[in-house]
Length: 261
Length: 362
Image (cartoon, rainbow over all chains, first blue to last red):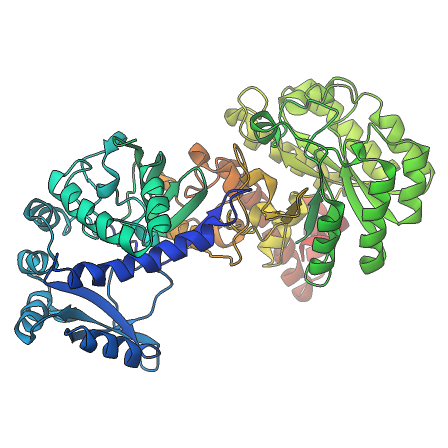
């Protein structure tokens, strides 16, 4: 692995005539964050991760407690522009959020905290974390096997034309647009698809129109192109870029096509 | 650097190497610009942009009344105007407009006769330039260096003769822009560095202060220079903000190919960050002594057309930076010696140290 480590960044530029997509993607991102919590509430998982900032601490905690959950803080994380692959400790005086987990019981919260280990833990217990977050075993195994070598392990053996289920599509994860919140082991992972269907069913109840748009976006043909530490994703509506694991010698390109379309 | 107002991407010519051909092929341009939206953008950017220029496609395809509206708006804010044209549509009425609005007319032309073979139907441009000059209109030029005008020794001699004529006899300021990316049109990789060095030497010897050579010297002095060495972020180009016919903002048009991407609000120097760390054998600039001068070159000329690589023209820029750095070393050597001994004057004579170089290298 190279030492090239770019500052975290996420950028999204609409194509001419598609100006609305910048706002729409942001709306989808917030919706997907909320859906993590909704999946927890609906009992599809035993824990959900959360970043709680100073500004919304009171409101968020009240909501969590009202719903009968607790928040277990794990570590302070420096704020970044958009997504970040690595949780960075804030410097003195730097803005931060509390990263932690939301669970039903204190024990589950502590189990998660122990498995995660915060910033100091070099060997997180992915199996335990995956179990609490409700991730399929096959995907937890896949992550455990690949994440040490590639911190952005999107179907690491795949390139070129890739067909898969929209429920498994993680190519827009940098912008927070996803049905599966875990690294799916394959673009056609049946366990992730099943979990995704539950997610979709719940999401449609919350906001049918937005859910359909999100599903449509994840179904559309797109190109994911990773090179020199920057991933560039092109959809018919916009181009997005973000920092990623650096492929130095040869770029890796995934031409996504949905099998459900 | 500047706001480029591009109401219409269509053109009356079909230049083989035009970087807007791909956009035009995908979506044939229509004369459907929104004049009010364009004027609104000019007003929004009048303070932050030092220059506001009219561009195309071919800007002079617009009706004169619309050209005048745009020129008048720019003139109101800048007290001068500028536009870039292939010059073929210039007539007396347009010259009147140029004089009224103090327009600097940037002409794109690659030279007379067969030198402009990649720009069909432009043979008459030489006469139009003469007319503009005789009318007192300020003229600048962009000369695209390609196989058509610099591919053979004979063509280069012809080009040099013409360069001397327009620079020394007509007082025109110009720049050499590389023809990028089209096989058979772009100078062959094996000869382009030596061709550019040949032109650099010609300009030095004749006191012709044209870009990119002047820009290379400026970059060696840590001064600002032409866009090719700005380290542009392709999603928010420092070199240019382009306004399209519908008023939407995009970047330098070289960054747009099959589609037009809207401009990001914030500039991010990701390419600078990447190139400094990526070894040269993988398309980066790691340990290149000219990186801070060249910044990997124009991202739209990058290896494999991927902005995450350095420019394919690295060999050319490296050769030119080395050449001018050596001249600079000689100049400095001379200056130090001058203080110590009068004998230095003899040495300068011996090495042909000229007043011309002294003027702009120190």
